[in-house]
Picture (spheres, rainbow, N blue to C red):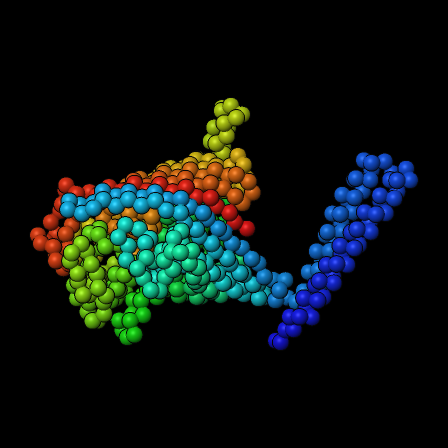
Length: 487
Protein backbone atom coordinates (compact mmCIF):
# COMPACT_ATOMS: atom_id res chain seq x y z
CA UNK A 1 0.00 0.00 0.00
CA UNK A 2 1.40 3.37 -0.96
CA UNK A 3 1.58 5.71 2.02
CA UNK A 4 2.05 9.45 1.54
CA UNK A 5 4.02 10.45 4.64
CA UNK A 6 4.07 14.25 4.07
CA UNK A 7 0.26 14.78 4.02
CA UNK A 8 -0.08 12.50 7.02
CA UNK A 9 2.42 14.55 9.04
CA UNK A 10 0.60 17.78 8.05
CA UNK A 11 -2.72 16.38 9.28
CA UNK A 12 -1.14 15.29 12.56
CA UNK A 13 0.44 18.74 13.07
CA UNK A 14 -2.77 20.70 12.39
CA UNK A 15 -4.81 18.30 14.52
CA UNK A 16 -2.43 18.69 17.43
CA UNK A 17 -2.55 22.47 17.13
CA UNK A 18 -6.35 22.34 17.10
CA UNK A 19 -6.42 20.21 20.23
CA UNK A 20 -4.08 22.61 22.01
CA UNK A 21 -6.27 25.58 21.01
CA UNK A 22 -9.43 23.87 22.29
CA UNK A 23 -7.78 23.10 25.59
CA UNK A 24 -6.57 26.71 25.89
CA UNK A 25 -10.10 28.07 25.14
CA UNK A 26 -11.67 26.04 27.95
CA UNK A 27 -9.05 27.30 30.41
CA UNK A 28 -9.70 30.93 29.37
CA UNK A 29 -13.47 30.54 29.86
CA UNK A 30 -13.05 29.11 33.37
CA UNK A 31 -10.61 31.90 34.22
CA UNK A 32 -13.16 34.55 33.17
CA UNK A 33 -15.84 32.94 35.35
CA UNK A 34 -13.43 33.02 38.26
CA UNK A 35 -12.53 36.67 37.59
CA UNK A 36 -16.23 37.65 37.67
CA UNK A 37 -16.71 35.88 41.00
CA UNK A 38 -19.03 33.21 39.60
CA UNK A 39 -16.49 30.51 40.59
CA UNK A 40 -14.13 30.53 43.52
CA UNK A 41 -10.46 29.51 43.13
CA UNK A 42 -11.03 25.93 44.33
CA UNK A 43 -13.99 25.39 42.00
CA UNK A 44 -12.09 26.84 39.07
CA UNK A 45 -9.07 24.61 39.68
CA UNK A 46 -11.28 21.52 39.93
CA UNK A 47 -13.11 22.39 36.71
CA UNK A 48 -9.81 22.91 34.90
CA UNK A 49 -8.55 19.52 36.05
CA UNK A 50 -11.78 17.78 34.98
CA UNK A 51 -11.83 19.58 31.66
CA UNK A 52 -8.18 18.77 31.06
CA UNK A 53 -8.73 15.05 31.74
CA UNK A 54 -11.79 14.87 29.48
CA UNK A 55 -10.09 16.90 26.78
CA UNK A 56 -7.02 14.68 26.88
CA UNK A 57 -9.16 11.54 26.58
CA UNK A 58 -11.09 13.07 23.70
CA UNK A 59 -7.91 14.21 21.98
CA UNK A 60 -6.32 10.79 22.27
CA UNK A 61 -9.40 9.08 20.84
CA UNK A 62 -9.70 11.58 17.97
CA UNK A 63 -5.97 11.53 17.28
CA UNK A 64 -5.89 7.71 17.22
CA UNK A 65 -8.87 7.54 14.85
CA UNK A 66 -7.03 9.76 12.35
CA UNK A 67 -3.99 7.48 12.17
CA UNK A 68 -3.72 4.57 9.74
CA UNK A 69 -3.94 1.10 11.31
CA UNK A 70 -0.28 0.41 10.55
CA UNK A 71 0.75 3.35 12.76
CA UNK A 72 -1.77 3.02 15.59
CA UNK A 73 -0.70 -0.60 16.12
CA UNK A 74 3.01 0.23 16.62
CA UNK A 75 4.46 -0.09 20.11
CA UNK A 76 7.93 1.22 20.99
CA UNK A 77 9.93 -0.08 23.95
CA UNK A 78 13.57 0.23 24.87
CA UNK A 79 16.19 0.41 27.56
CA UNK A 80 19.59 1.89 28.33
CA UNK A 81 22.15 0.72 30.86
CA UNK A 82 25.20 2.63 32.06
CA UNK A 83 27.75 0.41 33.78
CA UNK A 84 30.92 0.71 35.80
CA UNK A 85 32.78 -2.61 35.89
CA UNK A 86 35.84 -3.77 37.80
CA UNK A 87 37.33 -7.15 36.87
CA UNK A 88 40.33 -8.88 38.44
CA UNK A 89 41.58 -12.42 37.78
CA UNK A 90 44.57 -14.32 39.17
CA UNK A 91 45.93 -16.43 36.35
CA UNK A 92 48.10 -19.52 36.15
CA UNK A 93 51.82 -19.49 36.97
CA UNK A 94 53.97 -17.76 34.39
CA UNK A 95 51.28 -15.36 33.14
CA UNK A 96 50.28 -11.85 34.12
CA UNK A 97 47.27 -11.29 36.36
CA UNK A 98 44.35 -9.61 34.64
CA UNK A 99 42.87 -6.37 36.00
CA UNK A 100 40.53 -4.01 34.16
CA UNK A 101 38.20 -1.15 35.14
CA UNK A 102 35.90 0.34 32.54
CA UNK A 103 32.69 2.18 31.75
CA UNK A 104 30.14 0.64 29.43
CA UNK A 105 26.84 1.48 27.79
CA UNK A 106 24.09 -0.68 26.35
CA UNK A 107 21.11 0.74 24.45
CA UNK A 108 18.30 -1.20 22.79
CA UNK A 109 15.16 -0.17 20.90
CA UNK A 110 12.27 -2.49 20.03
CA UNK A 111 9.39 -2.01 17.60
CA UNK A 112 6.21 -4.09 17.74
CA UNK A 113 3.45 -3.84 15.15
CA UNK A 114 0.16 -5.66 15.69
CA UNK A 115 -0.51 -6.36 12.02
CA UNK A 116 -3.91 -7.92 12.74
CA UNK A 117 -5.64 -9.62 15.66
CA UNK A 118 -3.48 -12.74 15.28
CA UNK A 119 -0.13 -11.64 13.82
CA UNK A 120 2.52 -9.40 15.34
CA UNK A 121 5.90 -8.31 13.99
CA UNK A 122 8.78 -7.64 16.42
CA UNK A 123 11.97 -5.88 15.41
CA UNK A 124 14.83 -4.81 17.69
CA UNK A 125 18.16 -3.02 17.31
CA UNK A 126 20.92 -2.26 19.79
CA UNK A 127 24.50 -1.20 20.39
CA UNK A 128 27.13 -3.61 19.09
CA UNK A 129 28.90 -5.87 21.58
CA UNK A 130 31.43 -7.13 19.05
CA UNK A 131 34.27 -9.03 20.73
CA UNK A 132 37.53 -7.23 21.15
CA UNK A 133 38.03 -6.30 24.77
CA UNK A 134 34.90 -7.89 26.26
CA UNK A 135 36.72 -9.79 28.97
CA UNK A 136 39.89 -11.45 30.13
CA UNK A 137 41.55 -12.62 26.97
CA UNK A 138 38.39 -12.48 24.88
CA UNK A 139 38.77 -13.18 21.19
CA UNK A 140 37.53 -10.76 18.55
CA UNK A 141 34.29 -11.91 16.91
CA UNK A 142 30.72 -10.90 16.24
CA UNK A 143 29.29 -11.54 19.66
CA UNK A 144 25.85 -12.99 20.52
CA UNK A 145 26.16 -12.55 24.30
CA UNK A 146 26.55 -8.80 24.65
CA UNK A 147 25.30 -5.42 23.50
CA UNK A 148 27.85 -3.63 25.69
CA UNK A 149 29.99 -0.89 24.21
CA UNK A 150 33.02 -0.06 26.37
CA UNK A 151 34.02 3.58 26.70
CA UNK A 152 37.15 3.95 24.60
CA UNK A 153 36.14 1.17 22.21
CA UNK A 154 35.52 -2.57 22.28
CA UNK A 155 37.98 -3.61 19.63
CA UNK A 156 41.47 -2.28 20.15
CA UNK A 157 43.85 -3.36 17.38
CA UNK A 158 41.02 -4.36 15.03
CA UNK A 159 40.03 -2.85 11.72
CA UNK A 160 36.31 -3.59 11.92
CA UNK A 161 35.41 -2.16 15.32
CA UNK A 162 35.65 1.34 16.85
CA UNK A 163 38.76 1.52 19.01
CA UNK A 164 38.75 4.78 20.90
CA UNK A 165 39.14 8.48 20.14
CA UNK A 166 35.35 8.84 20.74
CA UNK A 167 34.61 6.63 17.75
CA UNK A 168 30.95 5.96 16.94
CA UNK A 169 29.64 2.54 17.90
CA UNK A 170 27.78 0.30 15.47
CA UNK A 171 24.08 -0.57 15.65
CA UNK A 172 23.20 -4.23 15.14
CA UNK A 173 20.09 -6.37 14.64
CA UNK A 174 18.96 -7.77 17.99
CA UNK A 175 15.79 -9.50 16.92
CA UNK A 176 13.41 -9.77 13.98
CA UNK A 177 10.56 -12.25 14.11
CA UNK A 178 6.91 -12.79 13.42
CA UNK A 179 4.49 -13.97 16.09
CA UNK A 180 1.30 -15.82 15.22
CA UNK A 181 -1.25 -16.25 18.02
CA UNK A 182 -4.31 -18.14 16.76
CA UNK A 183 -5.82 -18.27 20.27
CA UNK A 184 -5.03 -17.25 23.83
CA UNK A 185 -3.12 -20.48 24.57
CA UNK A 186 -0.92 -20.99 21.50
CA UNK A 187 1.91 -18.81 20.15
CA UNK A 188 4.20 -19.51 17.18
CA UNK A 189 7.39 -17.47 16.66
CA UNK A 190 9.62 -17.56 13.57
CA UNK A 191 12.81 -15.57 13.03
CA UNK A 192 15.52 -14.16 15.31
CA UNK A 193 13.60 -14.17 18.56
CA UNK A 194 13.57 -13.74 22.30
CA UNK A 195 14.48 -16.99 24.07
CA UNK A 196 11.25 -19.00 24.48
CA UNK A 197 12.48 -21.32 27.26
CA UNK A 198 11.69 -20.64 30.90
CA UNK A 199 14.45 -20.63 33.51
CA UNK A 200 14.53 -19.15 37.02
CA UNK A 201 16.01 -15.66 36.64
CA UNK A 202 17.14 -12.71 38.68
CA UNK A 203 15.21 -9.46 38.36
CA UNK A 204 17.78 -8.33 35.77
CA UNK A 205 17.04 -11.43 33.66
CA UNK A 206 20.27 -13.35 34.36
CA UNK A 207 19.90 -17.17 34.09
CA UNK A 208 21.87 -20.39 34.54
CA UNK A 209 21.98 -21.93 31.04
CA UNK A 210 21.44 -18.98 28.74
CA UNK A 211 23.02 -15.55 28.59
CA UNK A 212 20.05 -13.14 28.64
CA UNK A 213 21.36 -11.29 25.56
CA UNK A 214 21.15 -14.33 23.26
CA UNK A 215 18.37 -14.14 20.66
CA UNK A 216 18.18 -17.57 18.98
CA UNK A 217 17.31 -18.05 15.31
CA UNK A 218 14.69 -20.48 14.05
CA UNK A 219 11.15 -21.32 15.10
CA UNK A 220 9.32 -21.95 18.38
CA UNK A 221 5.87 -23.15 19.44
CA UNK A 222 4.66 -22.10 22.89
CA UNK A 223 1.49 -23.50 24.46
CA UNK A 224 0.00 -23.02 27.89
CA UNK A 225 -3.34 -23.99 29.38
CA UNK A 226 -4.67 -22.68 32.67
CA UNK A 227 -6.51 -25.50 34.44
CA UNK A 228 -7.31 -23.46 37.56
CA UNK A 229 -5.58 -20.98 39.89
CA UNK A 230 -3.45 -23.81 41.26
CA UNK A 231 -2.25 -25.25 37.96
CA UNK A 232 -1.22 -24.01 34.53
CA UNK A 233 0.49 -26.50 32.22
CA UNK A 234 2.81 -25.34 29.44
CA UNK A 235 5.15 -26.61 26.74
CA UNK A 236 7.82 -24.85 24.69
CA UNK A 237 9.27 -26.50 21.58
CA UNK A 238 11.89 -25.03 19.27
CA UNK A 239 14.25 -25.71 16.39
CA UNK A 240 17.23 -23.33 16.23
CA UNK A 241 20.01 -22.98 13.66
CA UNK A 242 23.37 -22.60 15.44
CA UNK A 243 25.73 -22.86 12.47
CA UNK A 244 25.35 -22.76 8.69
CA UNK A 245 28.39 -24.57 7.30
CA UNK A 246 27.45 -24.27 3.64
CA UNK A 247 26.63 -27.99 3.53
CA UNK A 248 23.16 -29.02 4.72
CA UNK A 249 24.34 -32.36 6.08
CA UNK A 250 26.88 -30.59 8.32
CA UNK A 251 24.78 -27.64 9.54
CA UNK A 252 24.43 -27.34 13.31
CA UNK A 253 20.90 -27.45 14.73
CA UNK A 254 19.36 -27.44 18.19
CA UNK A 255 16.11 -29.27 18.93
CA UNK A 256 14.54 -28.57 22.29
CA UNK A 257 11.40 -29.44 24.22
CA UNK A 258 10.27 -28.07 27.58
CA UNK A 259 7.32 -29.25 29.69
CA UNK A 260 6.31 -27.40 32.85
CA UNK A 261 3.64 -26.53 35.37
CA UNK A 262 3.10 -23.39 37.42
CA UNK A 263 0.51 -21.88 39.70
CA UNK A 264 -0.46 -20.59 43.16
CA UNK A 265 -1.53 -23.39 45.54
CA UNK A 266 -2.54 -20.81 48.17
CA UNK A 267 -3.14 -17.08 48.22
CA UNK A 268 0.48 -16.47 49.23
CA UNK A 269 2.50 -19.26 47.60
CA UNK A 270 3.56 -19.86 44.01
CA UNK A 271 5.69 -22.35 42.06
CA UNK A 272 7.13 -23.04 38.61
CA UNK A 273 8.60 -26.43 37.66
CA UNK A 274 9.98 -27.42 34.25
CA UNK A 275 11.94 -30.19 32.58
CA UNK A 276 13.78 -29.51 29.32
CA UNK A 277 15.65 -31.62 26.80
CA UNK A 278 18.14 -29.97 24.44
CA UNK A 279 19.75 -31.88 21.57
CA UNK A 280 22.42 -30.33 19.33
CA UNK A 281 22.89 -31.94 15.93
CA UNK A 282 26.39 -32.01 14.38
CA UNK A 283 28.15 -30.19 17.26
CA UNK A 284 31.52 -31.35 15.90
CA UNK A 285 31.04 -28.86 13.08
CA UNK A 286 30.50 -25.94 15.45
CA UNK A 287 33.33 -23.47 15.38
CA UNK A 288 34.31 -22.66 18.96
CA UNK A 289 34.62 -18.94 18.34
CA UNK A 290 32.73 -17.32 21.21
CA UNK A 291 35.17 -18.08 23.98
CA UNK A 292 38.01 -16.59 25.92
CA UNK A 293 41.47 -17.97 25.26
CA UNK A 294 42.08 -19.68 28.58
CA UNK A 295 41.78 -23.35 29.48
CA UNK A 296 38.27 -23.48 30.91
CA UNK A 297 36.28 -24.39 27.81
CA UNK A 298 34.23 -27.29 26.56
CA UNK A 299 36.79 -29.71 25.12
CA UNK A 300 38.06 -28.88 21.64
CA UNK A 301 39.83 -31.01 19.09
CA UNK A 302 42.56 -29.84 16.77
CA UNK A 303 40.86 -30.84 13.52
CA UNK A 304 37.29 -30.16 12.45
CA UNK A 305 35.59 -33.00 10.54
CA UNK A 306 34.30 -30.59 7.90
CA UNK A 307 37.67 -28.91 7.45
CA UNK A 308 36.33 -25.69 8.92
CA UNK A 309 37.99 -23.81 11.75
CA UNK A 310 39.74 -20.67 12.86
CA UNK A 311 43.03 -19.95 14.58
CA UNK A 312 42.86 -20.34 18.35
CA UNK A 313 45.65 -19.13 20.58
CA UNK A 314 45.99 -20.35 24.16
CA UNK A 315 49.04 -18.83 25.79
CA UNK A 316 51.88 -19.63 23.40
CA UNK A 317 50.03 -22.53 21.73
CA UNK A 318 48.07 -22.04 18.51
CA UNK A 319 45.77 -24.58 16.90
CA UNK A 320 44.84 -24.01 13.27
CA UNK A 321 41.40 -25.55 13.75
CA UNK A 322 39.04 -25.81 16.71
CA UNK A 323 35.84 -27.79 16.98
CA UNK A 324 34.03 -29.54 19.81
CA UNK A 325 35.17 -33.05 20.64
CA UNK A 326 31.85 -34.31 22.08
CA UNK A 327 28.20 -34.10 21.18
CA UNK A 328 26.08 -31.92 23.46
CA UNK A 329 22.64 -32.89 24.66
CA UNK A 330 21.24 -31.73 27.98
CA UNK A 331 18.62 -32.93 30.41
CA UNK A 332 17.59 -30.01 32.63
CA UNK A 333 15.30 -29.70 35.62
CA UNK A 334 14.40 -26.25 37.00
CA UNK A 335 12.35 -25.04 39.95
CA UNK A 336 11.21 -21.73 41.46
CA UNK A 337 9.27 -21.75 44.76
CA UNK A 338 8.17 -18.63 46.60
CA UNK A 339 5.96 -16.96 49.18
CA UNK A 340 4.33 -13.53 48.98
CA UNK A 341 4.26 -11.43 52.15
CA UNK A 342 6.09 -14.19 54.08
CA UNK A 343 6.12 -12.44 57.48
CA UNK A 344 2.73 -10.76 57.40
CA UNK A 345 2.44 -8.29 60.28
CA UNK A 346 5.28 -9.83 62.29
CA UNK A 347 7.81 -7.22 61.08
CA UNK A 348 7.85 -3.48 61.87
CA UNK A 349 6.20 -1.21 59.32
CA UNK A 350 9.51 0.18 58.09
CA UNK A 351 10.71 -3.33 57.12
CA UNK A 352 8.93 -4.56 54.01
CA UNK A 353 9.72 -7.97 52.49
CA UNK A 354 6.95 -8.57 49.96
CA UNK A 355 8.34 -11.82 48.55
CA UNK A 356 10.85 -14.61 49.30
CA UNK A 357 11.80 -17.61 47.23
CA UNK A 358 14.31 -20.29 46.30
CA UNK A 359 15.33 -21.47 42.86
CA UNK A 360 17.53 -24.15 41.39
CA UNK A 361 18.52 -26.07 38.27
CA UNK A 362 20.26 -29.33 37.53
CA UNK A 363 21.93 -30.08 34.19
CA UNK A 364 23.32 -33.34 32.85
CA UNK A 365 24.85 -34.23 29.49
CA UNK A 366 23.90 -37.92 28.89
CA UNK A 367 26.74 -38.54 26.40
CA UNK A 368 28.42 -41.74 27.62
CA UNK A 369 31.77 -40.75 26.05
CA UNK A 370 32.19 -37.79 28.40
CA UNK A 371 33.96 -38.54 31.72
CA UNK A 372 31.56 -38.58 34.66
CA UNK A 373 33.16 -35.59 36.36
CA UNK A 374 32.72 -33.38 33.26
CA UNK A 375 29.01 -33.81 32.42
CA UNK A 376 26.97 -32.14 35.22
CA UNK A 377 26.01 -28.65 36.31
CA UNK A 378 23.81 -27.18 39.02
CA UNK A 379 22.54 -23.99 40.60
CA UNK A 380 20.99 -23.24 43.98
CA UNK A 381 19.85 -19.76 44.95
CA UNK A 382 17.51 -17.60 47.02
CA UNK A 383 15.94 -14.15 46.64
CA UNK A 384 13.81 -11.66 48.55
CA UNK A 385 12.14 -8.33 47.84
CA UNK A 386 9.71 -7.17 45.18
CA UNK A 387 8.87 -9.27 42.14
CA UNK A 388 9.36 -6.16 39.95
CA UNK A 389 10.91 -2.73 40.40
CA UNK A 390 8.46 0.15 40.14
CA UNK A 391 9.87 3.25 41.77
CA UNK A 392 11.48 4.24 45.02
CA UNK A 393 11.06 1.73 47.82
CA UNK A 394 11.01 -1.35 45.58
CA UNK A 395 14.00 -3.67 45.71
CA UNK A 396 15.24 -7.25 45.33
CA UNK A 397 18.31 -9.09 46.63
CA UNK A 398 19.48 -12.52 45.42
CA UNK A 399 22.41 -14.91 45.58
CA UNK A 400 23.19 -18.04 43.57
CA UNK A 401 25.89 -20.71 43.76
CA UNK A 402 26.69 -22.39 40.44
CA UNK A 403 28.85 -25.19 39.09
CA UNK A 404 29.47 -25.96 35.41
CA UNK A 405 31.54 -29.06 34.76
CA UNK A 406 33.64 -28.86 31.63
CA UNK A 407 31.43 -30.62 29.08
CA UNK A 408 28.00 -30.37 30.68
CA UNK A 409 26.88 -27.56 28.38
CA UNK A 410 28.27 -25.97 25.24
CA UNK A 411 30.27 -22.94 26.32
CA UNK A 412 28.85 -20.54 23.74
CA UNK A 413 25.66 -20.16 25.83
CA UNK A 414 26.24 -19.29 29.55
CA UNK A 415 26.24 -15.75 30.92
CA UNK A 416 29.40 -14.05 29.64
CA UNK A 417 29.85 -12.17 32.92
CA UNK A 418 30.52 -15.49 34.66
CA UNK A 419 34.22 -16.05 34.06
CA UNK A 420 33.86 -14.79 30.44
CA UNK A 421 31.18 -17.39 29.76
CA UNK A 422 33.33 -20.49 30.24
CA UNK A 423 32.48 -23.92 31.56
CA UNK A 424 34.55 -25.90 34.10
CA UNK A 425 33.91 -23.15 36.64
CA UNK A 426 32.19 -22.66 39.99
CA UNK A 427 31.22 -19.60 41.97
CA UNK A 428 28.77 -17.21 43.58
CA UNK A 429 26.74 -14.41 42.05
CA UNK A 430 25.21 -11.74 44.34
CA UNK A 431 22.77 -9.11 43.09
CA UNK A 432 20.98 -6.13 44.67
CA UNK A 433 18.45 -4.06 42.70
CA UNK A 434 17.06 -0.78 44.07
CA UNK A 435 14.29 1.24 42.43
CA UNK A 436 14.97 4.97 42.17
CA UNK A 437 11.84 6.18 40.38
CA UNK A 438 9.46 4.83 37.79
CA UNK A 439 11.43 2.83 35.18
CA UNK A 440 14.80 3.83 36.69
CA UNK A 441 16.82 1.63 39.05
CA UNK A 442 20.29 0.72 40.29
CA UNK A 443 21.72 -2.78 39.96
CA UNK A 444 24.74 -3.99 41.99
CA UNK A 445 26.28 -7.35 40.99
CA UNK A 446 29.27 -9.20 42.39
CA UNK A 447 30.69 -12.40 40.86
CA UNK A 448 33.32 -14.60 42.48
CA UNK A 449 34.22 -17.50 40.18
CA UNK A 450 37.15 -19.86 39.77
CA UNK A 451 38.07 -22.97 37.83
CA UNK A 452 36.20 -26.05 39.07
CA UNK A 453 38.53 -28.83 37.86
CA UNK A 454 41.09 -27.81 35.29
CA UNK A 455 41.61 -30.46 32.62
CA UNK A 456 44.34 -29.88 30.07
CA UNK A 457 43.39 -30.32 26.43
CA UNK A 458 46.20 -32.17 24.61
CA UNK A 459 44.72 -31.18 21.23
CA UNK A 460 45.85 -27.62 21.97
CA UNK A 461 49.42 -28.66 22.66
CA UNK A 462 49.39 -29.36 26.41
CA UNK A 463 50.79 -32.61 27.76
CA UNK A 464 49.47 -35.05 30.28
CA UNK A 465 46.12 -35.91 28.68
CA UNK A 466 43.11 -35.00 30.82
CA UNK A 467 45.30 -34.38 33.83
CA UNK A 468 43.54 -32.45 36.56
CA UNK A 469 45.50 -29.44 37.79
CA UNK A 470 44.55 -28.82 41.41
CA UNK A 471 46.82 -25.90 42.26
CA UNK A 472 45.68 -23.35 39.67
CA UNK A 473 42.08 -22.27 40.20
CA UNK A 474 42.56 -18.76 38.76
CA UNK A 475 39.92 -16.98 40.90
CA UNK A 476 38.17 -13.93 39.46
CA UNK A 477 36.23 -11.11 41.12
CA UNK A 478 33.87 -9.06 38.98
CA UNK A 479 31.94 -6.06 40.32
CA UNK A 480 29.28 -4.24 38.29
CA UNK A 481 27.31 -1.09 39.15
CA UNK A 482 24.50 -0.37 36.68
CA UNK A 483 22.11 2.51 36.20
CA UNK A 484 19.12 1.19 34.23
CA UNK A 485 16.42 3.11 32.39
CA UNK A 486 13.56 1.74 30.29
CA UNK A 487 10.40 2.86 28.57
